[in-house]
Length: 257
Image (tube, rainbow, N blue to C red; front, side):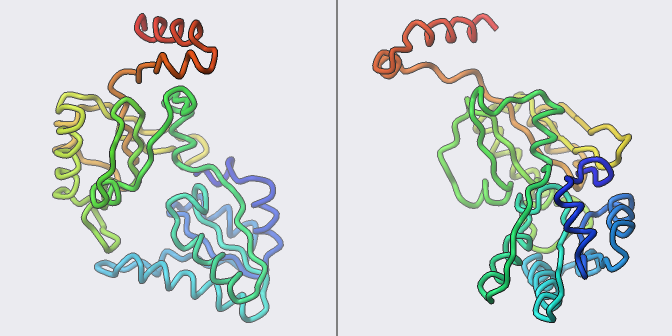
């Protein structure tokens, strides 16, 4: 997320040794870091156009990357955050390259969700985690456990197929209505934006679900929905696992908290 300080050593090496680098980072410092590491760097940002379907934009990105690969060049594609977390062209570029017989790998990075865990003090091992793109969360109904933390990516583009210049207010209100039905309108949520500059701070806005309908949400925001309490322990399973005393202690501790 913060290219100047969160760029891994292995990713840095791939950028510096590539014949061509294509990047999509969205901030001038990140772009400067990449271009300083390799002068043969090209931004993918220009491929975004108002009213252009995001799928078409992503396909154009992949084809631009693959054209250089097909030309026999060693190519590195750099995306902010993790290149495989809510980054469709990252996965598709690797898939197409491999299908055409080229060697292609993806290196892990630090995603907005990783930053969210650290900045909000969340341990997904405690109560589990549910994570969806906001559009997918609404379009593909699932059985959501309100006692398990929920992370929703890209809430600003709910109801959008293109890359908008501003949040889709109508879509956000639909999302808020659905969440209100599940959690109640006064349930607290967090509008979170990871820091992108080396000396910056994350934006953490704690509001209620009903306030979400009228809150101006930043374009890079991720929505975190805390759980409604703690899931109860299954005493039969606890007995089978020999964890009855431990489970009872844990339940008492959670209730006391």
